[in-house]
Image (cartoon, rainbow, N blue to C red; front, top):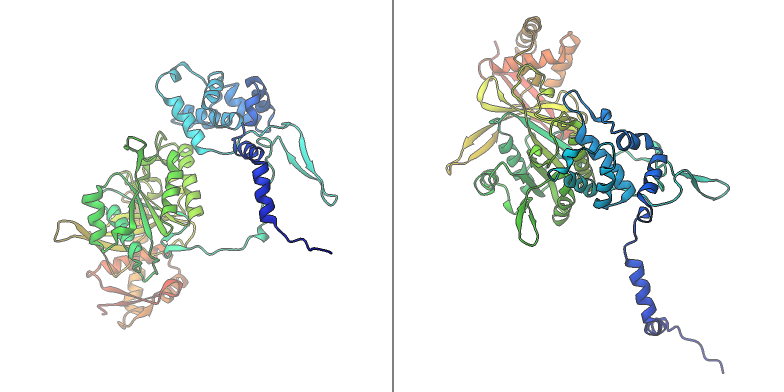
Length: 514
């Protein structure tokens, strides 16, 4: 008599686990144990030999063997700290996260100097390198190739290219699908990217970012009718008081304080406060964003306060902090808003007036300047400073800041959008150039008042702009004429918006036609 065999896999697994319990426990313990870095079994001399044989050996030897800092030197800086950091980054790859070994090899290098024995500079440098992380040496022959076969085609990994296990990962552009830029505020603050707000003290930067934050927390449309998706806002801010400035500012704009997070750190287990260092604490900011999945905006006011030991005037050092910040924005989808300052040298271009390194301007995809309206001291203008993701002639915004009954302040947007150029506000511009332009401005004003807008009716602004270009007037001159005409009579030129987003149209008319 044939008896069918029933599947009893669960019972078999249970029996196997009982009989071989000791062996299974040992295997799990071995598989979960951390594996030592490949370089641990090698002597210092063997590791250095690998480093000197790698493809980037010239860079390593220049630092380690010759103490050459020329690659990192600038006109006002010998590049010592930058060279130290670069050497420690090399050593991190070969040694792994082993601070004692990195220190030992650093001491044996040509970059070592007696003054490094004082203070904790070396410890902080090595800690910063380890905190940054990255690939480490995985063993193997530095000058060999690893080959794998497949359908007659040999694939090779060049072990000399920045260490073993590194291979090409190039991307054929045709395999990439184009993506549209997403915006927190259309054409003003992009998602997944960094944006800069820059201004002198007293121009309303902090009030402006709190107003923007309040809109995000309640999903209220931005000026111009731009859609706003509701979400959480994270502040990294140690200049403004939480209870007496940030909270009242959010309340004054009608924001939802339950969707505002002030990013803070403490040391365990004594709970002592820890100052935020963007170079070392970025993983904790990642965790904060993950804890609030609807985060739309991270505001850093100002970034120079959170650089740790980084010199804010050194381009390479600032980039080492801001570049990972850009990656954070791309990975999490948030917009990062950097609040920065102008210096007081009014004769320079606004592009060169940002306090600190130019990296603060170069890395954000778009930056806005906050200035006082030259025609009305009670108004503030938000004008395009730099962009590589929008049209270069975007009109700005205007706003006023007025006191509230409880002694705080409220920001209110003006209906008209200024068309003045930021560079027009440089008082040191050559007089000859200004004189030559003034007659052209007068010509446009006469043309607008006597021909185009004389009927007092509304006209499509873009059609007038195109007509001005056809008559030989440049865009900057046309903008100055509009601004001057608007100033005359405190608003003789009126604007009206129609539609939203890319379909928006601006109409203009002369309020006091002849």
